[in-house]
Length: 303
Image 1 (spheres, helix red, strand yellow):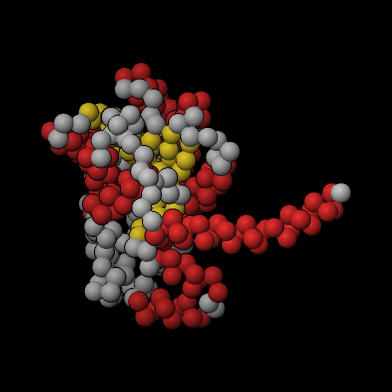
Image 2: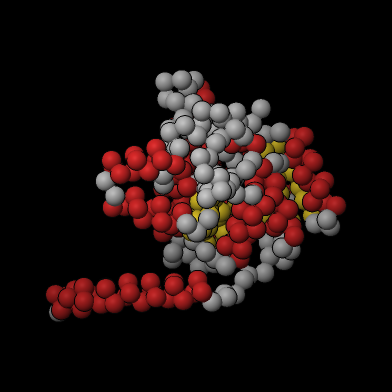
């Protein structure tokens, strides 16, 4: 009997895969229902500047009940919070370094007491040093891993249990296409983002049986922010840098649509597919042609 059931499952498996592929294709073509943000409390790490700042403004614009900003620089957090408050939305900010586990847990408790339960957690905080391995300072390498990767462990552990308890919540990660297609000169960033992607893929699968709680991972191409100031793209007409406000808009829309993974722009899907079957020599030629080997030569980053 067990053998018969196993054979039936084996035969049905390709049919199920085909069904899900067709369903996903049709869903992407048809307008889907978006969830209302009116009751959501959104916390954004790295919320004082760059993509984080635009995310905060977009969540407020889309009607989020409360927006909470975390970051390491009070000046930028305060400026962003004041800008959002002028639009009529409720916004709070707290100085918090996500690399510091004890600080994350402490500030999470303060947030719950002063603002309420966080229902949408956006892990956006990140740093990049833009140097080769041998030119990188050991402490700088550790800093990248602690902020870009381990910070997600601490923030998710701090807020996910309450989401599971309430059966309502969403964990968002602003990742990078460099987690799938690394470049020279940013080895710390590429490594940390690859680890971050694995974290989110595992978390997304782990929450499949948890009603009301979802995940969204955003993998954007080079975005025009201070963090990547000076990074050069060989063919900017073909591959223009993304605007941070566009990344923010598409991210909020993906959260409202419960979309698990978002590639920006959509052409990045082709890059992932090419990497899955092309030989290493061909991939190296693509990198040379696109200028990926020299794109970090003029990197300045955030001062």
